[in-house]
Each structure stands twice: as structure tokens, then as C-alpha cells.
Length: 245
Image 1 (cartoon, helix red, strand yellow):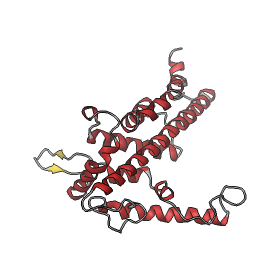
Image 2 (cartoon, helix red, strand yellow):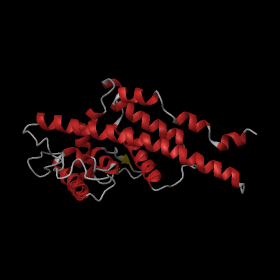
Image 3 (cartoon, helix red, strand yellow):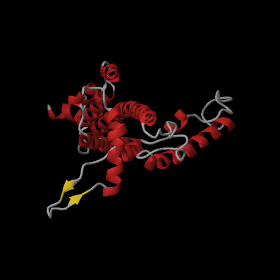
Image 4 (tube, helix red, strand yellow):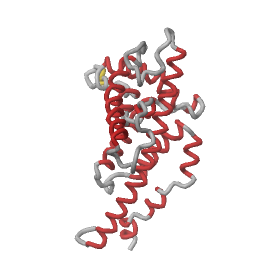
């Protein structure tokens, strides 16, 4: 755009538009992801022998079996604290809701706690990256062998079943989904921090998010793509129009 103020403003407006559209898609994927994982965690808990506490998000130290027990407190404790702070805001009427909050005085729920778990946490505890072979022949684990082993166990027992919208033969590779999740977390953080997207491949970011949806819930994918605004926004990139002149 050089030093042309008008072109810079157009690019700024376009960046705000694509950021908003991708943010909405990230939010959709995050909600579907956490709901699917939590559902599978409950199914695994009921089927496990010995039976594990299906209410692990609210009671992380009460009869939660491995491998979920290795991460339950790390996920639940900060989320419960945040949920309690949100309850205090509701009860005291100091939030954005005008007048008395409809849930004033009510205890926190499982959904309250789940909503406080960040996308970064879901990524950190429920996905794993395959180890790689170093030039000297040694194996490099991410981030270390112990963490890799329990993350892999959680993925195989819980997470993989959340990504079961397609047939078994078409299931996404765990290493592929881990890499996509890492990119999605970076994208979410970038947008959340009001950083521009003009120097990244927004089309690829959309593809990543739709890939996750495809393997999580095809009905949600179809519903979203029926009115997906991102392709039109991508075509309206002012830099494309300028290059054609």
C-alpha cells in the first residue's frame, strides 16, 4: 500500500472484516470441540473399569481415573475459580446485565466451568504431537516423553472419539489434527490481541477450521458453510484489486 493513506484505510477495514469473520468461526469450532470432548470424557468415564467420575470437571480429585486424572485438576481448578468470579459478578450485579441477573444466587454449573476452559488448554491436554527422529538417532518427544505418553493416552481414549464424524477409514491423523490445533490457537490469540492478519494466509486458516468441523460434526459444518462469509471477504482483499490494475 506504500504511503497511500486511502489504500491503507481500505486494507485496515478489510483486515477488521476478515478478523471478525475468522473470530466467529474460531468461536464456533471451540464450542463444538469442547462439547464433543466433554461428551466423550463422560462416555469413557462410564465405560472405564474401574468406573471414573464423569463429573471430572467439577470434582477433579474425586475418583477420576487415569489418564484423565493426570490433567483433571490442572484444567478444572483455574476454570472453577473463574466460574466463581463470574458468579460473584452476577450475584453483585456488577456485570453488563441491566438490573438483577436472572441467575443471581444460583450455584455454578458444569457448563459454567467448561466455558472457562481455554482453547489453549484443550489443545495442551487433549492432543499430542508424534515424536520425531533426530539426526543422531535419538527420539525427540514434545514436550517430553512422560507428557507425550499421557497426552497420547487421553487422545486415544477420549479425543479421537470426538473426531468421529466421518468413517473410521477417513478419520483425521492425530499428528495432523495436533498441528492444526496449534495453528488455530495461534490464530485465535492473534485476533484476540488485535494483531493484523494481512501477513498470514487467511484462506489456509479457514481451511484448518473447516477441517476440524468436518471431523467433529458434519451437520454444523453444513450449516456454517451455507452462509460462510469468508470466501467473499477474501476476494475483496484490496491488495488483489490493486495488483490487477
